[in-house]
Length: 246
Ligand code: PGA
Image (cartoon, rainbow, N blue to C red; front, top):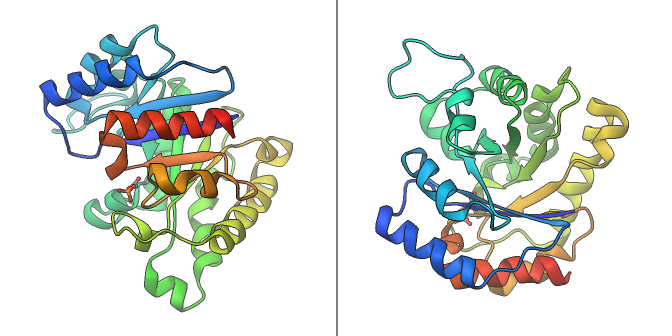
């Protein structure tokens, strides 16, 4: 199975998002083993879900709270995300870890909460440039993955996103991606047993239509989490086609 996920972050207003959906849907033909998801800002979730319903494109939230409900001003629960038509939720994106103080402890609760509401968690992991230069990449990844310890049976996707490659135009090279994904696969097998062999591992960080084909050809790469380039419907449609033809 291959997966292509658009992460719009805090971008697009309703008319732009709506135009995206029309243009993308016109240029997209679903294929069974390629999953396509769009993660708009939470205020657009229901609208985008409604517009794309029945077209083989699912919606993901970009974050969710682990508590089922209550006095958490500004937060959205997994039940509400599910209620807005989502099938998954991005968790632990580096922007949330760095700018909003999300810790592995909180993420362990979020993964469990997502699964218990039948949402697919897309757990993001990855090292900073300083950590890479200090040769701490594998230990950082190992710690971030440890939130999956004791996670039950539900499906999960992982995205390896080296922080120095996000929004910088600088992609990790094939060898760096291969080493990281191979390490992640081994860790997933340790943490999840046989189920760890089939967890899709996406790459993220300055993926665009022109480099996605070569990234997808790296062993253990199941797809991509795409930020900047995912807001252009034709470019995103081209990336999906690349995944379908790979
Ligand atoms: P980018 O973002 O494609 O703009 O680098 C990826 C991400 O943050 O998920």
